[in-house]
Image (cartoon, rainbow, N blue to C red):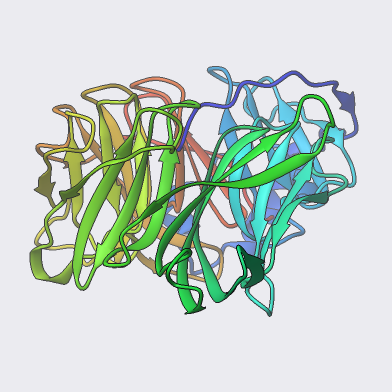
Length: 391
C-alpha cells in the first residue's frame, strides 16, 4: 500500500550551502546533451545536494508543502524548504535493495532476496543505519504431523505490512508428500510481534486454492486487504476484512491483450488501482475490488513501456508515471492525472520529465524522483522545479 509518510525525527545539520557560481559551473559540465538541457534546471538548486547523489538513487517523500524526507548517498535527509537547507537525520543510512514493505522514515521493513529463495524480512529502526532480521522461513517445508511426513517447497511471491509489527506473507506451496493434511495452494501467514515475548512470529492463518498464484498484496489497515493473483493469463483479486483469516472472491479483474497486473495502489478500502511496469493499462475499482474498469493513459504520439508508479490522492484524483526511455542521468517518463477515479487520464507535464516514482501531498503538490533527480510540482503536475540533480 502506498501511503503518505508520518514521521518523528531528530535532525542534525550537516551541509553548507555553496555559492551560486559553483552550481552554475557544475551544471554546465554535467548536463550537456541530455534531458536536463530541456528541463531548464534552475540556478537556485543547492549544490550541497551533490552529497545525496553519490549512490544509485535518491528516494524522497513529501511531508509538507516544501518539506521533504528521504534517502540518498549515505544519508537519511530532511529539508524544510525545497532543499535550500539540508539536514542529515543519519549519515550512515541505507535504503536496502528489496521490496519496501513498511516505511515511516525512522522504521523500515524490507523483504530481501536470497540465493536459496528463503523468506527473509529485515527491519531498521534507526533511519536505515542498521538492519536486523525480523522474520525468516525456509522455502523447503519438512515436518511430521500426526505421524505423516510433510514435505514441499514454498515460493514467497507476495508480502504486505499494515504497520511495523503487523504483516502478511503469501506463499505458492507445492507439496511433495503429506498432501492429505498440507496440500498444494496459497498459504497465508501472519507476521506479528508478540507483545509478551517481544519476538516476531510467523503463523499460518488461511489457505487458498492451488488454481491461483499470489502476485501482490496490500492492506489498508490490520483488517482490510487484498491479494492479487493470477490463474493462467488472467488476474483475480481476493478480499479480506478480518486480517487474512478468511477471503472473499476470487473476483475477475479482466485481462485485455494478456495484461497481467503486478502492483496495487489504494486510497481507502473502496478505491484502489492495479498496474504493472510491463503494461500501460490501469484497472480501477470503486467497490473494494469487486468490479473493475480498464483505461490506458497514453497518447497516440508517445511511446511508453509501462506504469512505474501510481499514487492515489483521493477517491477521484490519482497520479501515475509511465516510463518511455532513459538517458545518462535517469529514466524519462510522463505524469498522467485522473480527476474521475481512473475513468480517463490526461498527460500533466508540459515538458519532458525525469520520473520513475511519484508521491503527492495533495491534489496539486507532488514530487517525482528518478535515480538521482528529484523534482516538485505545485500546479497539478504541469510544471516541475528541479530540487536534486547530479551536478
